[in-house]
Length: 250
Image 1 (cartoon, one colour):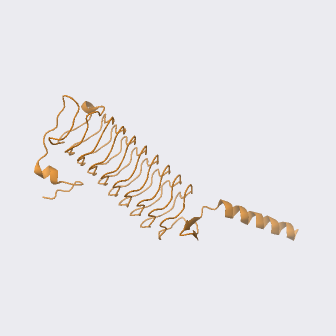
Image 2: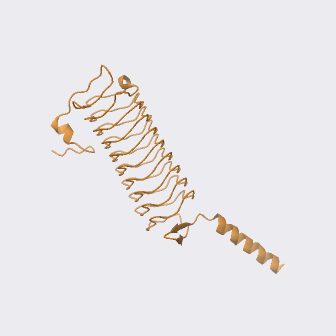
Image 3: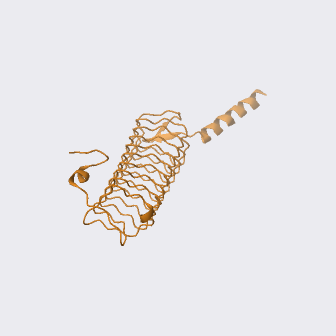
């Protein structure tokens, strides 16, 4: 009987080792914990379950997090720069003031994410889902949101300078006070979107859908702004052009 019990304990231990959602940093094992706020740069966490983790202030730059489950993670000011989050489930995550520059979010589920003030410069969000997200004042400069879904999200005062929103679903999205200098909207659906006080110098909206159903009250453009036929925006003033991310620099 003692030998049988010993074998059962050994099997249970082996099973736990196989199924434990451990991580590896620099080739060294990182014990699973619901709170890991240290340095885990270049961590291999592909497909791992991080649900409920607290990553506030942690450094996960260059980490592999593709197809991981990160629903509801608390990651204020986390560093995910250059991280691969392809196909990850990040619904309801808190990424306020997070560093997400150059990160890959292709097909990532970001519904209801809270990411106000986040830095998403040059991030790749091809096919990402951001419905009902709150990303006020986020920086999407040079980001690619091709075929992304942002229905009913709030991105007021966000910076989309040079961003690509080709074929994106922007129905009902709030972009009040946002900066779209040199942004591209090829085939994007902006029906019901709000662009109050937004700036579009050099932007290309030639082929957007639903221009007449969007709210452009107080919005402005420039001589180089391209709009659908028979539509127009007033020229931006010097004060409007100097405003970035909702801050008047005059």
